[in-house]
Amino acid sequence: MSLPVAELHMHIEGSLEPELIFELAERNSVTLPYRDIDDLRSRYEFTDLQSFLDLYFANMQVLRTEQDFADLARAYFARAAQGGVAHAEIFCNPQAHMARGVSLEVVIDGIMDAVSASEREFGLSSGVIAAVLRDRPVREAVDMLADLLAMRAPIVGIGLDSAEVGNPPSLFEDVFARARAEGLHTVAHAGEEGPPEYIWQALDLLGAERIDHGVRALEDPELVRRLVDEQIPLTVCPLSNVRLRVVDTMAVHPVRRMMTEGLVVTVNSDDPAYFGGYVDDNFTALRDAVDLTDGERDILARNSIRASFASEARKSELLAAR
Ligand code: HPA
Ligand code: ZN
Image (cartoon, rainbow, N blue to C red; front, side, top):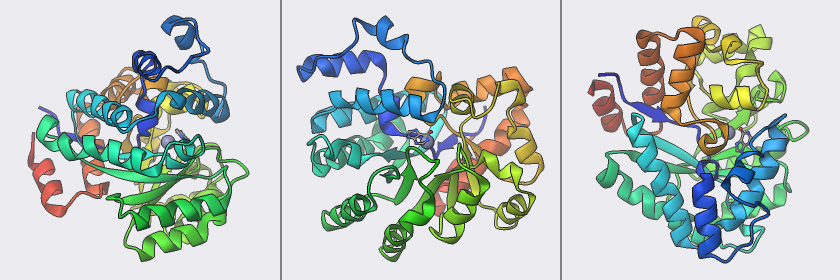
């Protein structure tokens, strides 16, 4: 038996499968601009991050009620547990829902309903990270954090996602400072499409404890040294990188080079409904394309558990489980 995995980079809205999109559209009387599931699936062909984000935000419109968010998260936990995930820290994008009239309470309470049940239902511990949409006004992020704190949302941290290039981490220094002061963990997407400079900013200006993606760190040897010295985990998403053309093919994905450099690499699914699979599918793709060994898989699994925000007791339990 192999070690269980902690999934640390997964956008819950990115686990919205086509079947559930149609089911929720029906439930909420939303008219979809697609003839059928095949027509929808034919659009899952991306040229870059933005081409994906356009579809990702469009499909979210079927999420309306607390029950919808609970069903979405529960479906993810069920599938992730099947694939060997024993702990998950899931991103949500409250601003994307609030902008279309869905309240923060609906989003958080719905997701928390599934989170609270995940350990009992699937043996999977979990937490929620509210991610700031970096391509929307800074003021909106400030307000969202204030709202989350005011409602005492049981989130474990704050993240930063959406269109990276032109929206540097430096814009969100104050938001992240407030989050840290309130005892929240901080992570940030950086070095996916954006330059290594954005990773430096995420570390130095946002106090990011983990870098989401971070594959472009390899372009900057001094940055690699910093990440290795401080053992900052990188939440790498191989299938996502191929589908969004961050790398050309899985065969040339730098995951092994990153490990050899001494970086703390973890493997994650990012948006599993859009990029061709869940964490186990990412491991399978790496095994097939770059001959990732069982030993290397175990190193990546161990990294993910250690890099998680789970309690030390939970980490020990997972590291001992085989
Ligand atoms: N990058 C940035 N923002 C995102 C992603 C991603 O891969 N997935 C969902 N939001
Ligand atoms: Zn992501």
